[in-house]
Amino acid sequence: MDVRLINPFIDATLHVLETLASTKATPGKPYVKKDGVARGDVSGVIGLSGEARGTISVSFTEKCILAIVSKMFGDEIEELNDEIKDAVGEITNMISGQARQKLEKEGRSLKGAIPSVIVGKNHSISHITTQPIIAIPFSSELGDFTIEICIED
Amino acid sequence: MDMNINVLVVDDFATMRRIVKGVLKDLGFKNIIEADNGVSALKDLKTEDVGLILCDWNMPKMNGLELLKTVRSDEKFKDIPFIMVTAEGQKQNVVEAIKAGVSNYIVKPFTPETLKEKLEKVLG
Image 1 (cartoon, each protein chain N blue to C red):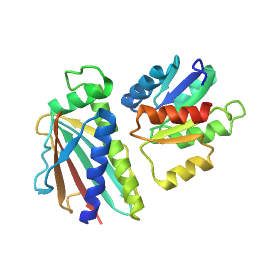
Image 2 (image 1 turned 120 degrees about the horizontal axis):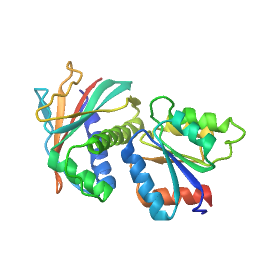
Image 3 (image 1 turned 60 degrees about the vertical axis):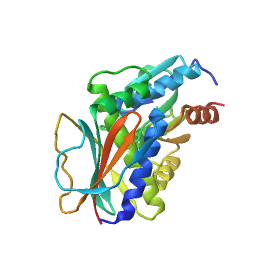
Image 4 (image 1 turned 135 degrees about the vertical axis):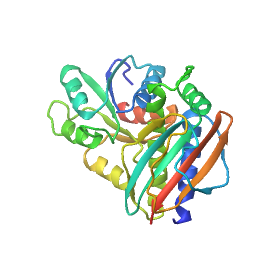
């Protein structure tokens, strides 16, 4: 996978979290993920098509996403309910949109599908398996989350 | 800006409808109608006197661009200000929306200030 595809997704993630929840996150070192188990309790997954095909996902720990959505709504949310699922879908959608906008400026046009959301301890995420899955862990004052990128050139 | 108009917020994500609604209420808009796709929005347009549409792009059943084209081709609705509020910020999308007659375009995520600024441009 072309490593130049990674930075737009990191930048998009930081921008979306800061704008929606006034939260500054810090990206950790990207690594190649060898298994399909999500590094969080709730994940948003979105398919990409166009000049390249792939999937990206965003997995939040329960503590992290409850804190983020509570901050977005200005209202305490205490359980992984439908509001949280909906918010994760929209956050994933926005990260995808922001990153695709940046990629377009570099001459790569991608389309995003409608996101799906998976909830549960140790759930798995299905990517395009022929390409390595690049995972980037993030830490923030609200908790930890991980994005995964798997794109065919 | 006339705060008494009916504002139709169209988005398949309840999260985004809630955020937009919160900003609109903070700005002083009193009457906000919600729809989760273009088909529901058209039903609302037929029963309510809508003065502004804030609409997402990617939605099931009827997307935002299809709704915009339908609104602009209908004699009764064609002059309603229509702001696209979407994660689709690619040039091609913006150009397509402008060709279809969009009044303004906001890329998600946005700050309350951005929404306010676009509303002032569209509503005066």
